Length: 63
Ligand SMILES: [Zn+2]
Image (cartoon, rainbow, N blue to C red; front, top):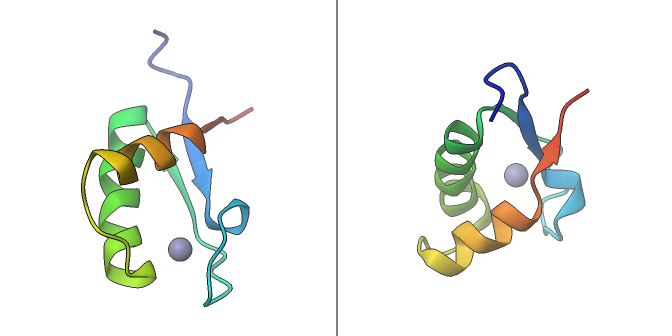
C-alpha cells in the first residue's frame, strides 16, 4: 500500500442529526481511529466493530 495515498471520510456522506460537515483525512488507520472517536463524541455512536465497519465502508481515496 502506497504511503502517499491518503484516505478520508466525509461526515456529509453519513446520515447525522447535527448536519456535521467534518472531513477527516490521513492514513486508513489514522482516519478510522479519529473517525471512531468523533462518531462516538459527536454523533452518539457506540464504539465497536460495527462502527469501524461502517466507517471503513465510507472511506474514500483522496486525489
Ligand atoms: Zn461528524
